[in-house]
Image (cartoon, rainbow, N blue to C red; front, side, top):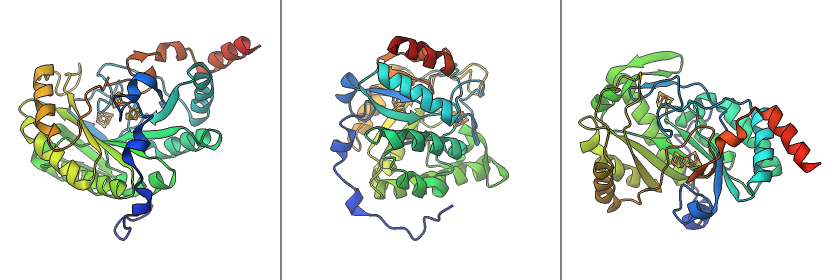
Length: 308
Ligand code: CLF
Ligand code: SF4
């Protein structure tokens, strides 16, 4: 583990943000008409408990509730990547977005990216996290050449955090209430700032939950900007069956867009998020995950028989 305290920003690494996002379908509205992304579902474990989540399914911080993805080993993920790349030539991004937390499964996340990167250095690598382990892994993320990281940060107030998070597991202990939410928040803030100063394009996801954190969202966006984040993605709460928030009202598109319009003054807003699966494949507007879901072995056989 590396400590972040004495590491400073490297302005040489802060190259043109727009150039880096030109081929990323989530970071650029234009790119989402041209380029596809693929998620590697190599991260099943999670280290926190969000009240909008039902852990039978994918991480709700980036996925629509009720969606279950397959889980792959780094080796199977690489095999699947090879098949997908051949069938989807406009694939530009390989992302890790669950089904749990990318950093709570760091060995798998790291190995999967390293394997693919070796023979495909032109790929953009991307990951999504709740941010709890960013102070531990941010230097390795930078070293690995990951230029796009999404961190879900829902509030700047540990009291509000205590309403959203039941507990966090951190350094071998379980923390509840404001203490747990406070640890999570501190690590999110430290990690976002570090990554942004290292030239990583940080997207902050915010789940908009009526009467819980909605009034605080403009402050979260302002803070994200101050820390150097590239954009925010305000997402609607879709109450997930079996979650603590199952009976809360959903956030309407009207409320969501009003909040995005309000926050756009401070920071660029993503408006084309599809809350996609942890094993999503294809253009954002056309998920092809089912096509590649039949098990990696059979996919490889199919691919060979097509090639022969
Ligand atoms: Fe995946 Fe997320 Fe990277 Fe995109 S998704 S890890 S930044 S490559 Fe994109 Fe999907 Fe929305 Fe995520 S549409 S849920 S924002
Ligand atoms: Fe669920 Fe994601 Fe929250 Fe973990 S971080 S509890 S997987 S929504």
